[in-house]
Amino acid sequence: MKIEEMFNKYDLKFNRDDFLQELKTRQEYIEKSLNECFEKIKGYPPLIHEAMHYALFNGGKRLRPILVLEGARLAGGNPEDVVRTACALEMIHCYSLVHDDLPAMDNDDFRRGKPTCHKVYGDAVAILVGDALLTAAFELIASNAELSGISADNVVKVIAEVSKAAGSRGMIGGQIIDLGTEGIDIDYENLQKLHQLKTGELFKASLKAGAILKDMPEDELDLLEKFSYEFGLAFQIADDILDVKGDQNLIGKPIGSDEKNNRTTYVTIFGVEKAQKLAIKRVENCFMYLGNFGKKADFLRKLALFTICRDY
Image: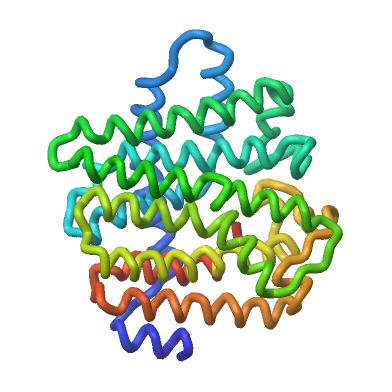
């Protein structure tokens, strides 16, 4: 199925500028919520909280918290009820970036156009910033049970879901595979597994978290899980293409880091043109898994499409 055919099937109208404005509105809400949540956890000693703030508020697409809110909305709930969990998922994502940028990992000096956390505060503080953001995230998820309409049982389910996604069988497992394959050619199947763990698991946990907190039935959660898998791969393929063809000023970090680190990517396996076609196929699959949700899933459809036509 071609993109145009998917548009017709779901009566979907996509204007990139309009969608960017909608995304900006949601990002601004997340930014405000992150500020409110951070105020609740900051304190003594000031240095660690200053560095945490630097890592958390240096830009970003805020896709994971947006997915948490969207999961709640698709389940028929009020997205505002799950905002603490949404902010928690962004903290986990930001912690992973702080650690990714360290000299022992990707050794990046810039993130989103600004010096990386360890370049500003030193390696030791950056390691502790990541640790602090991760633990603060679970404090926030647990506190979501304080709000009316959110059951403690569902909060426990979300903690289990997020723990697995962020741990050794999820994001960290993917990072381990990534480190172990530097300079080694890997095949398409193993590359997919790497990115399913490193990127896709946290996308999946984000979307499912909001839906679980608002009592979405298991069969619908299963569809969201399948969507998240395809979305995560489409997102990563687009990232690989941007690392080759992107604008450094828009991306906020030097392009060509994959080549510098001698990493296998979708582009090194397939080339840019075929990688683009593969990303489109993943978006087609995203649309397929959202079919049962009707028009209320249009934002997710547009988000899936945007991820392969973005320039940052």
